[in-house]
Image 1 (cartoon, rainbow, N blue to C red):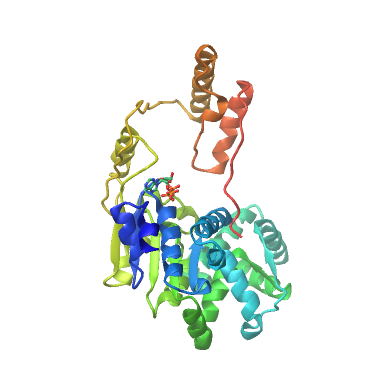
Image 2: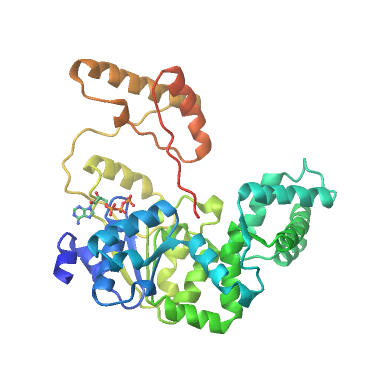
Length: 390
Ligand SMILES: Nc1ncnc2c1ncn2[C@@H]1O[C@H](COP(=O)(O)OP(=O)(O)OP(=O)(O)O)[C@@H](O)[C@H]1O
């Protein structure tokens, strides 16, 4: 089985798949077979007779979790489907349902999304007679979410704000306190609570912690560079004893600091888990050498990073063009013009279709400018969004 599972892996991938005892960090550049490694590693554990339910693989999106599950099932039909591959939020939601009675929670609790959260904040602001213009709903809702990502209770937020003489923070802490009371009264938890309450439960009830440590004997975390403090603590608690923890990520692809992600979680892994093994996946299977050298030139300027250099055996074709634009509207117009030009030229050679083009942007709000430009240039398009976390 070992030979079959490693047949389609390069040497670094094989090393990562076969290293199953003790802490392992896999630095995986884009397109280097990260998902292939995680799925093969789980399949390898299963092939050794490890119970599927004792392998926990955590991802950030449901889409990633189902893709991984599908690939594991292809490798090990039957048992593969039973491995615990799920998001942080769904693991914690299951945990809170299962352990509700132990931690003073109604097992039929509801889960509030960001819209519900903002409605509760609105009620709190009203009830506390606070100026809604100065204390904007979404700013406060975000501040509460960030506090939970950092495992901070209203009392922590209040103490910090008082210490810093921060009036805004002191008021936000009052809102946070009332917000929590309202959620409790409604038997509700929000996304941040799912993880924060799980962490608190594991910290406060040693018996629970031991039981879950025993249950989750092998832990894997995808996109580790995107974990926030709460998720990091959750993993550290579960893996703290057996230390069979494998994290996969790329410090060069950390884009969620605005959402509480802490790049130090990946950079400090080897400090957190002394004697951890580290494997770098640097062979890229998706891009051409020119794209990779351009990317390498950009990321090498990042301040704190683990040194790595992506390379590929793919043939070189075409070059990277840098387009300078005056502003975001001009940028979208120029891209629309370029697509129109290439499609028009193709009418004779039938080279490009609209579906050959993809536009990547950093934040959802940026889609608007492209959508406007595409509509006015009559370019058909689809906006592909991230799957929700639950
Ligand atoms: N050892 C290998 N030999 C040949 N092709 C490979 C190998 N490893 C990965 N690939 C191919 O590289 C591509 C990327 O693999 P995969 O989806 O597992 O990577 P990833 O690192 O998870 O991607 P992403 O950058 O989206 O996170 C896939 O097309 C996969 O088939």
